[in-house]
Length: 104
Image (tube, rainbow, N blue to C red; front, top):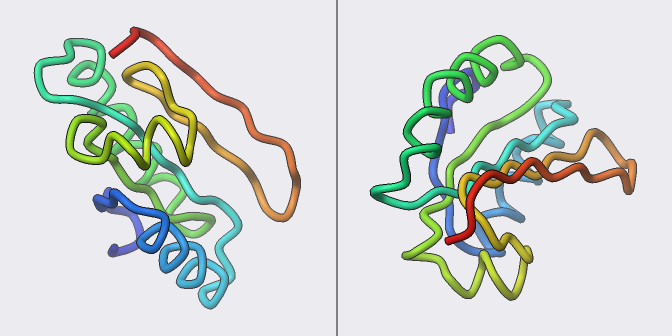
């Protein structure tokens, strides 16, 4: 993904690659937004999420995950159970906050 833009991913392998890329570029934030087609709150949060990605491009990489196409990744591996869901963690901290809106 290009810093400042929102990329897409849907597997642990892709997430690991994103984390490796962030580490190599000294970025300490990985942003993930889990969304689905037809979800009104998902659409409503697209522009603010893109704006944050642009504003924080020096600190992190940002991605969306299609919750319907990557169900196993979302529900079993990441435990995202609603859309939109935006879990985020800074640096090496175990701190992870999750913002959720609507069940999918």
